Length: 196
Image (tube, rainbow, N blue to C red):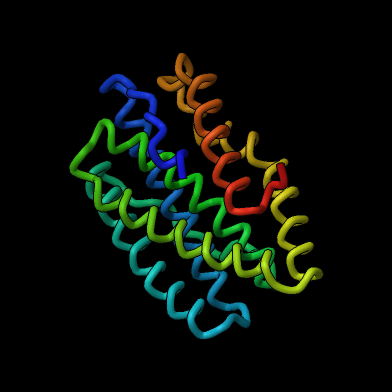
């Protein structure tokens, strides 16, 4: 897929702490979301993948906490996630895809973090395959995935804005947002979630 080879924007070194801080928050949210997802009634192969996924996110979080020098805040309650697998798959896929775009950006500044980019790519591929199976299956189930994708897509610009809100990123925000949205749109379209 061509979006995998799109050249990420290179940011100046002073942006690194802000990107690391954003990753710390994103990995904490991903960890809680994956934990919440595992409480749902899911097929065994998905549960097994989510357990490994949680372990990856825990390791990433610990790595960022060490680099930044402080821990992420704990949540009293796990975030709510959709109970139906087609909607949950879309949500997990969307956030993992967003995480992959930020990992690509981070690795241009920190090549030593390439392992995190590789993990993110594995997570995205898993959900991509699951979503393609959902779309190829029963019409009612595919419709649920498409409806979830449209709803998630409408929220994406606001979510992305929160990810890019650091003052040091302000000069680069428009170009960053455009590049990430374009990559996400291409990925969602190629997976079949956004109809051309």
